[in-house]
Image (tube, rainbow, N blue to C red; front, top):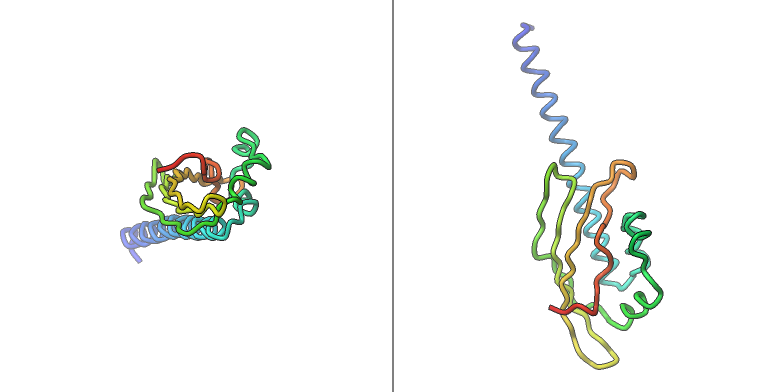
Amino acid sequence: MTKRNFCFCLLMISLVLTSCAGTTKTLALDETLLQYARYIRWSQYESALGLHHPQYLADHPVTALDLQRLNLFKVTGYSASERNMLGDGSIVEQRVIIRMYNNANVREISIVHNQVWKYDAEFERWLLHSGLPDVTSRR
């Protein structure tokens, strides 16, 4: 094998490995977003908190009142309308529209949940940096 062919093979291998790493990260993001959507759709807000960055939760604690307020509603729709990857691909902004039905006043509301997901190398996973949906903000 000539030196030129050897260099070409090394280049191709490095490109394949780089693309695999990006694909793995993207697949992990897709899986995380689907899991979070499931938690919200089934009103499993405590479980959804497990996908938040611990430092974010320390800076923005979720109170029992916040969870009680969310539990007044039944989620009737969850649709991601936009997803933007920023910078080097380790930050993703996603806009989600959530429809929720309030049994107390028999009304459906629609809220926009702007999510900021960041890949955390320490935890080796995507974590949310924008909190649970806020039912006090309406679209």
